[in-house]
Figure 1 (cartoon, rainbow, N blue to C red):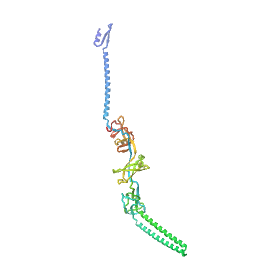
Figure 2: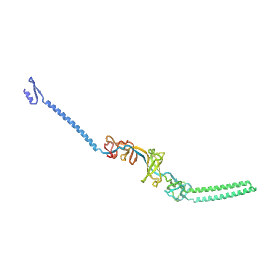
Figure 3: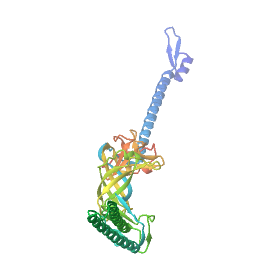
Figure 4: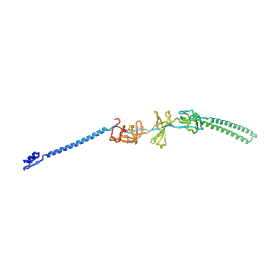
Length: 397
């Protein structure tokens, strides 16, 4: 081995000697570098795997944290319910047949009023008496005129009878008989005229009394003793014929189309806890152009608690309907109208406009906007915002 070979061997280099004596040098470090590259590659791969696992774990933790931070919200799926149709309306109570009573004669000074508001009266009963002292004297004079005319008629008849007896003897001509007959007929006619005049005066005097045109409940008395009344004085009394009362319920244009005469209704006067059962007997054929409402007239039996002029609330049956029924807490409203919050498949809150119907003891009928299969936020909707992630929980869990 040469000196160079020895030196290279000391440095760690491989020395090979050929058969012909030549020295071949190989680097021992080649294999070491390969092993180093492999180790570095393994380390990089391990670092990549560790980074991936770290990122995945972080995302899962973030998702867990997000789920833990999402508010727990109670939701319901209402489905569809068959509900008895009901229309709620307000209106005033009134006499079903309101009969104003006033002066029908020439009038005069009121001397007596034997009735008070709230009294039941019969047909023809005197409600007020008007002074008739002058008219009574005129009636007496007319009665005397009848007596005078009757006496003249009797005298004319007697003259005619005597003339008829003398005409046969020739003492009285036929012309005289005819004249006496005409005188007798005129006297008899004057009796009839006098009698007719008396009847007229008596009829006028009878009209001085203000009487009830029919039996019923006296609602108002607008006159006092001593007042002077005439045909232009207006109604002095108001009478509810038969005591029948009705409610004039104001119903929206759309709801009015659902009503028919004969359906039942429950009427509750304002300030009262009593409910009275009635029946719609007439639905208005026209709509008020100002408020787009019509009148449903509900007939009611008399009761002292039903006072004409008072306000009342009516619940009118209008058939049945099948629709989602939500608790009132689930239905919100703002300037844009009524709406509910629906939780979608990603647990995000979405606003859904709805059209509400009648309100029952079980909830609010939703006429359109949802099918009933959605997850509807039951409560706390006013604290949510659209797009917010929530943790939905079914009611009852």
